[in-house]
Image (cartoon, rainbow, N blue to C red; front, side, top):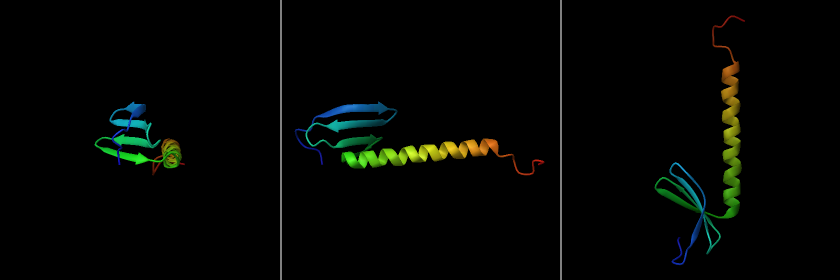
Length: 75
């Protein structure tokens, strides 16, 4: 819930994404398109860790796919 005296500082923004810090309650407001989530700092830290893990896994899978010969390729 947004406070009437809520003042936000923009921390980051890119292509429909915005992250702001509320000076009043200290929560992080994460906006993705038309959706805004109000998160406590520990939830933001956990979300960041999960997203970094997903990014690493995607990179690993991309690399594996590039290094694996196509099916039917002579050994």
